[in-house]
Image (cartoon, rainbow, N blue to C red; front, side):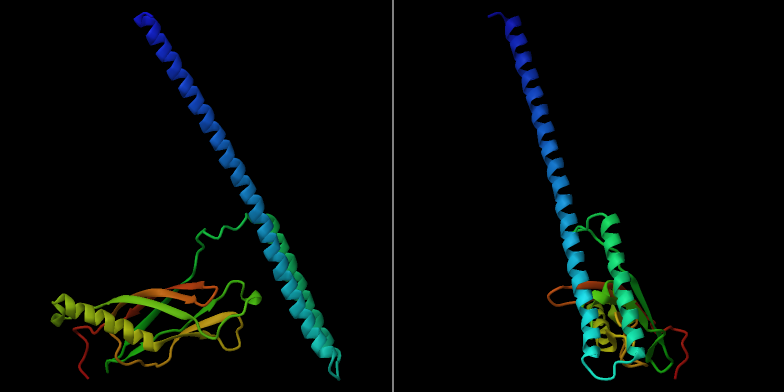
Length: 247
């Protein structure tokens, strides 16, 4: 076989290999697309099952309330109006869930969702104590369809304002840890009284003692078997200013 024939054969083999590789890549891409489409179908079915279970629980809770009143004596016009309104609200929420399930894209558990930000400012008093300017309310999404604890958790970290004696890294780290620990003892996240499905972020002692000026951050969340994020947390503790008057 001449050199020209060998070169032509090599070109044919290379062309065949490239064509086979392209066909295999196309088949793999089609397979991935098919799997993704079926995955979407499965997620829509899963969402439908979740919505159905939520509606069943809601209907059961609503009818249980009516049943309890019917089984006691003295069911009056006020009870009738109240129960009718509760059932109307239940039907409206059911319709809303069904509509959202039809128009919303399938939910992916690993897709990030936005959370609100809670900003707290502790103003420094002349006597060295600090006061929280305003507490903050956090509404919980889907609170009507889940049992919420009386208290939420706080994950916290931060950086204290460095003082002149904090030139050493160890001293600065101690101030940071002391500032975080002091805030942990002051902050509270509890269910807001008279407001179902809402948590209140507040200071249990106001004014608060032993806070360390600095900027702090963290996260408010519900722990337990089904953890749930509530809010991002940003805190400023006003530091002592050099021009502050002496007390």
